[in-house]
Image 1 (tube, rainbow, N blue to C red):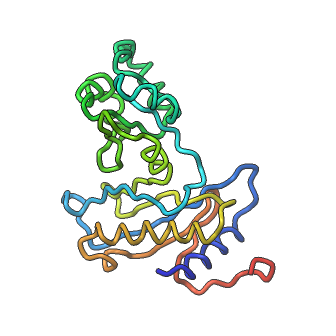
Image 2 (tube, rainbow, N blue to C red):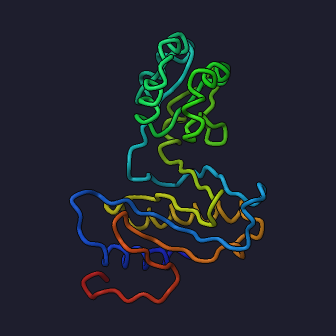
Image 3 (cartoon, one colour):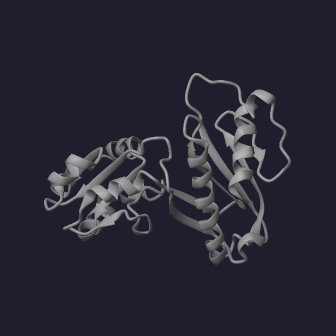
Length: 226
């Protein structure tokens, strides 16, 4: 897969997608083969930092102690201090928080407390602060670069089905940036696969409400779309 192939598939995906009254996301779909997903070593669960924006804001909440409280409130979309964790005894309140944010970051030295209070809800939803994504920070962390990096970080996983599907941008973004995001995901995924490109069956680009377009196939565009 190369950049020109991605750009061609992206142009076709946009051409065949009806105009919607919202900005559609662009998804990259990578179908895999030759994997036994019952084996943990064949399962994929990677956090990938894209070179460009995802096109959509990622809402992030910080779970921190007093050391990072003021800084977190000025950078993250919300911050909950450990001294206030005791307010969250009702499971419904914790579910409400889980539904309100895409990601959570935690101060590493209070992680046991985070797990005790929020883990029963966050865990099954895959929203526990994750060290692989950079979601655990020390008490003296500079939080701004953490927030900025997580705005460009996506999670690619294949645990139950042999495919990875992730958002790499939105239809109003520059096509070159979307293509470079796709290449970053592809390159990172190859490193996680036991047989690299030999485990890749096919690759598609699609808009939220559009039909998938296979990357690498000969694609004919309407004259006005070229």
